[in-house]
Image (cartoon, rainbow, N blue to C red):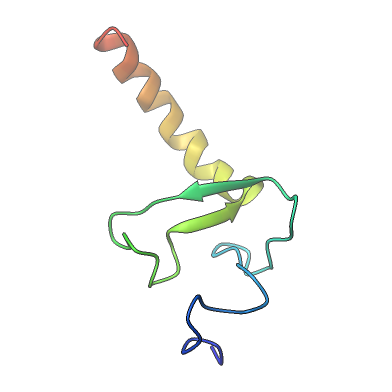
Length: 73
């Protein structure tokens, strides 16, 4: 990207890694964190559009619920 050398990244704001569209002020977002990209340099970790993050949450939520029930959380 042309703005990679600008501290803080793209001056136009954050972009969703999944759909590659800008995240506008007031849009529902989910802050995603991936172990492979802990500081967000690879463009995975950080804010995503809420609907773009949903497939990940739909996959992980049942597993988290099972763990919560198993460990009394």
